[in-house]
Image 1 (cartoon, helix red, strand yellow):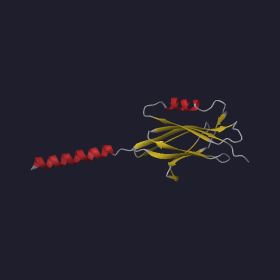
Image 2: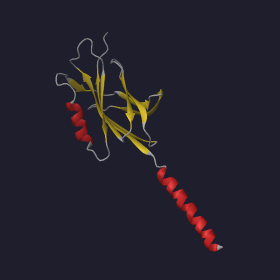
Image 3: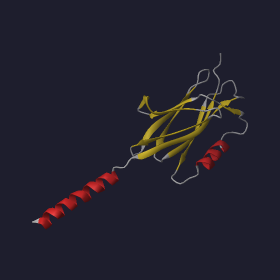
Image 4: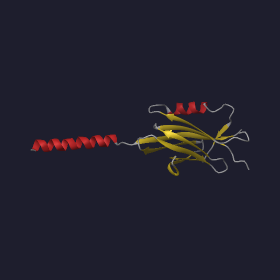
Length: 154
């Protein structure tokens, strides 16, 4: 009888352990830089460039590669106090994460999220500049984001 009871208890512990391990959360990490687009043409709109970062990839190198993808003729200066929000695309008014760029335009943040694939909206705002957002699929852990904001036309 004791042997059966012990086997049942060990089986329950094993099943609960497996359920616990498979229920672990995923992550959402964001790193980036916000810029003012200094020489923007009159019809230009603010832009967001996003690169997904796979586990083990070098964030700084990915950021440099993303910056290399911005056209060379664009003149940009780091922009402080840009409000960056990350929200679910289906509910963009309720954000997952909120960050503010520092004096060098840099920002970063992280959040534990469900380990599933889902749509997120990256939005950047600053008074006096055009708002911009971009919807992407979150199916990796991290994202490198480069933001180019254009001043509002008065």
